Each structure stands twice: as structure tokens, then as C-alpha cells.
Image (cartoon, rainbow, N blue to C red; front, top):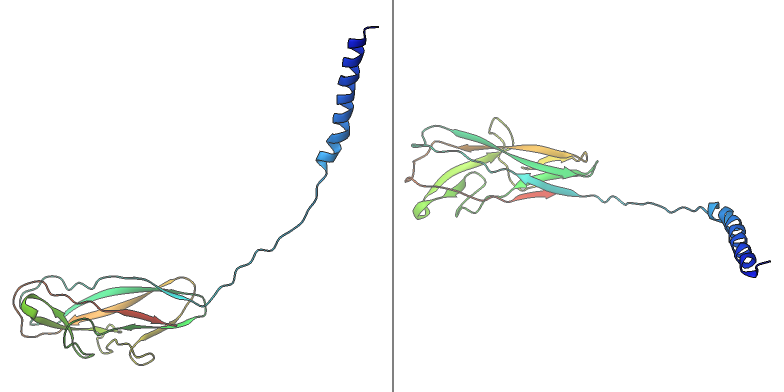
Length: 168
């Protein structure tokens, strides 16, 4: 008998036997689990605020109206208030915001919470702000702007910047 053939046969047979013994162990499983968590906190975000553009006009002898949209997103059930500041125009007040142009000339305007232009927008919560309750989605709020008839200053571009505050 050839000893080399015998050893090769035993090795091959042993390997085959070893493979059969380990295959069932690879098929065994162990299970476990892990927790998945999130904590939702009360939050509101000012998503966007579109510019309020009154366009181009000559003499301001009639009301010029335009709108802007403020988009707020709050967690569901979160009460909020949106306020708008007086702007950066020097001498601006709650009754007359001011756009400034060439040579520090101004154009008077105001911002309202209603389409009838009767409720001026300010920053005093529950007095001259807009309130709402979050629903988890983005909620649009319309800003109604008006430039009233006034003595028209010189030609040029006039602008102002107003701050928007969401209190929750």
C-alpha cells in the first residue's frame, strides 16, 4: 500500500468530516435587541420671510398695497406669536415705519396683520402680534403692507429692514 495515498485520503476524509461538523454551528443564531429613541423638544423656527416689494411708482397719491409671507414651523401643539419690529428707518414708529433713500429722504409705510389694513403689526405679544399653534408643518402668515398717500420725495430706491421674532 502506498503510504502517501493513504495520508492524502485520511487528510481529505478528515477535512470533509471537519466541514460537516462545523456547518451546523454556522447555521445557529443568537438574537438580541436594542432601543430606538428620540425626544422631541418644543421648538419653533422662522423658515422664511419673503421681501415686501411695492414696485416702481411716481407720485404717491393713492394707497400702494403689497404682501409678504412669513413661514413658521413649530412642533405640534406649541403656541407661538410672530412679531415684526419697527425697522431700521431713523424715526420709525408703530404708526409710521420709514424706508430710507437718497439723501436720507424717506417714504412712510406700515405693516398690518389683516387684509383691511386696520391692525398694525408690532412686537408686543398678544397685543400686536399674530398668534398660532404649531402643527408640525410649515405655516404661512401673510403680512399686508401699505404705503399711504404722502408728499413724494425725490426719485431713487428706498428700503428698510424689519426684524421678525417668533416667541414660543
